Length: 350
Ligand SMILES: C[S@@+](CC[C@H](N)C(=O)[O-])C[C@H]1O[C@@H](n2cnc3c(N)ncnc32)[C@H](O)[C@@H]1O
Image (cartoon, rainbow, N blue to C red):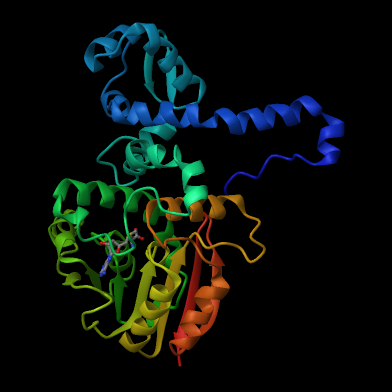
């Protein structure tokens, strides 16, 4: 699970007042650590150290850094556990080597990159957003199509998405009894990372990714890299306006949070028409707990609101009611131990 919140209670204050003040100050300055990580990824430091160990002087020369700040930067990264310093040379720590070196299937640096280049700037305007009640990116909920004119933007977005869905994929293995089904469609399935995982894990399944046409070239590239091109196909379309393919299982993950509640309900109703009786619906997102007490999903919900007009997280109960209205019965809500603290709702078509 994600980290627990600091304790600011009366009891904690009485026991150790300085610890309470320190915890408040940690919230105050934690963004500096985020920025150190963002810059290390932006500079390509983990990629550079993926192939070598290097002295500080070699790193400064090869990455074009000035020692005045960069020495502290390297040692802060070491203190944060992302680098190891051995006999005067820096190298990636095991965790950085696993998750921050581009090209690995476990790479989550795509999400670090987008947080550094887009989200950080938006969050700088949180006070304005709280006053005007608007997303700060200028993006509307249905705004995927325009930015998708830039293929590099689409690729960066796919890197960002896969950083997170990689961790959900394993939880989907046991979300339903896949032996009972032969097909699935991943709606908003992006370049097919989840679909590829499922057909590799369950060879009897045939998968379809339904997404906007601009995503198809990246899908082709991704599924080919995993040798899954004959098992997963791409169905280009708009899930609000185009006919949807029939399927045993419909998946929709990290997608409903991009849309206002009425659109989510409408989309789930459309999925209800696409799933055969006895089939299943799988919805995953960093859903808000019923008590609205989990800070991680609430921060994630705010993140959606900052990015996209009408976006937000929602509770599993809300998702369940959209599913019930669409002809499903809720079978399970799984709290998955992913890096984004996801909940997976499973419902069966009546
Ligand atoms: C936030 S991503 C989620 C991707 C993936 N399911 C995951 O878990 O990482 C939302 C996806 O929905 C797709 N999408 C957005 N609007 C769409 C529409 N109107 N019709 C079909 N797909 C759409 C986007 O292209 C994108 O791949």
